[in-house]
Image (cartoon, rainbow, N blue to C red; front, side, top):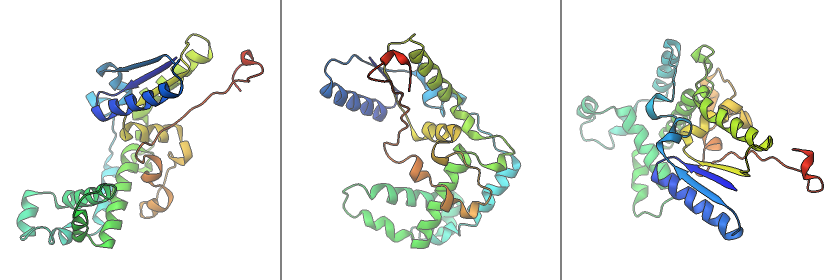
Length: 245
């Protein structure tokens, strides 16, 4: 018996469906229960309905602004995009435009699209690197264990998900549940704090020096496309009743 649940976002539903179809193709005798609904959102999509209790202290805000300002002047890149950067700056947040250019180009690299390299002309190599550092810092300071929060870790926004994993595992190990695989299909913004909460592969490491953060902690290693966590329990084939190995 497999229990599969997804958030209500279509791309996650499609991922769940494709994944379960592959399982069924290999093992037609499986019983697979698929479900999705808002009742699961409180632990699978922590951005909704205030489920993500973010903490942002004054120290954190000061440290964050200092980091972003040290990443260069976004109006330099925007000069290549706007005829009048000063007027654009009054209407738009140039730092966000700078980051949006980076996000668009780095995301579209994996897509066969004509003239995609045109986007690359708006950012120099150094600006690309700085945009990566900014993006990496955002993920670390928003979802991991940034020390500047004064001991409060934003990984606690994965507490609902972490508790659910423990609860469902206990039900199987104690014999109260016949489910042999609990599969959940969600988002990077739920996976990252879970990794930090359980400190998987060092995701929960506290790093004081933001200038060297990218050398010690990289979001790309934790939540790439199709990133996932697998917690697997094994029994002895010779003696299945002997408990979990």
